[in-house]
Image (cartoon, rainbow, N blue to C red):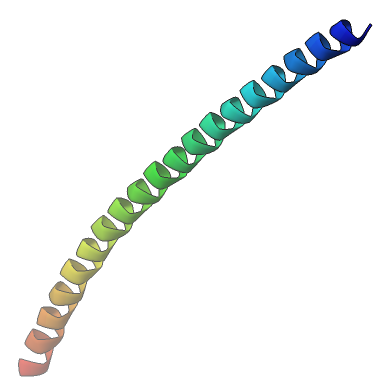
Length: 69
């Protein structure tokens, strides 16, 4: 009976370690996915900022022209 319990304990420990490794891998993948999502959001925000800067320049020029008339 003791040998059976030792085998069972060993198998249980191996399963626990494997589950921990798999959890670590999943956590790493989740972090990578979030980082990629953040990078995409930053790129979108940069594009929006460029569009806003361009619109600001255009409006400023129009206001200057309107004020000069």
